[in-house]
Image (cartoon, rainbow, N blue to C red; front, side):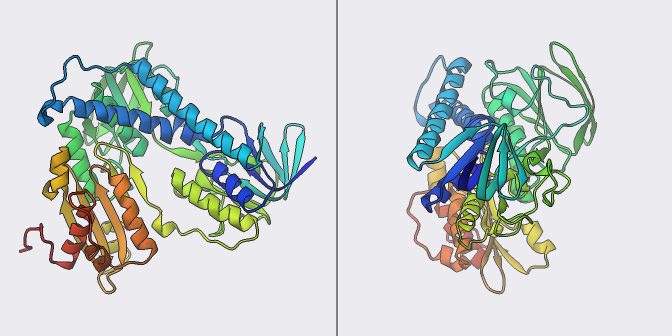
Length: 461
């Protein structure tokens, strides 16, 4: 039997961060991983998809090279080389995590973990004792009846990332982050893409004004967007699938590949096999408080398994909270300022309340907007499709939400997340001098518009 200060179950962006932070605070730490170091995010999620997205965007821009005075001939995509590059990126990141484990004296144990009692983790025949346990076991795609993944024609994200050829005709079921990102990848690489979503908009969790514009942009790029539409029937053969659609845009659709990107479930088996007193919701999400504590003393949970943010950086933030508390600290998670980014083309990022959510909460708000079309840097980059939207409390001026659609939205959103974390007022952003010419100026301009005096904003009538 081995004893530790902290045992972490799972080594994704929540688990490995929790382990390192606990070790930095002087703890003896072990990490139990049943699959690959880095979890879904590193191996079949965030990192590989963004690697493909970067290449797809680069290819899209190179096809427009003549607009920038560059002539290119014989442009093509070598999918085998792209997959090799993707695997190299994964391997290097994985090696980095393993190196950090070694440097911090963290023990990596391979196998399935079960919490059998408070402070006790069983991994095969090995029993681990710990003062604190942090569960970071993540989530997985939900099993959808009638849309079962076969790995050949009907794919999940893991199979989609391994395709060695660009499919000719693709149906993407679900226009959340994953589905919309893959739709953009395949569209840029030349596939005929149909994006099917049962909700009224693509990216249903994001600000509706922005996603309406995004859907219009998708259509201009040749993506067949079918919102308020669902699958009535799917027939799969060895060579493809025929989909019967019903709703706002019904019809029959013949495709070579179907990507299923709807629904997720939490991997909470590690704490539900024994009667520990842990509360889980209908998706298996472990219930925790703001200190990331479950109802069991010394047992914490973070990341997708708590069914809150479903974001890698959300898991990492929760990891810091759990690890510090496990080592005797007193830190709390602030979900108010967790930003999100959808790496579509263009990107859509947000933090805080959407306009619709703020109004539904009965808030009196001011909204400032600024178009990328009015940005000198956006014109120089050839990326004028976009808008930034800032939402402030009308009485106090405090920033309560920020939403960006456009180039580098994922980079820009951090500025507003910092502002919200510091409870900054909209005039704080408006009065901050931003470098010219940069995309960051769109934030200042939107803040000025919110205050009613935007220099590059037409007068409101």
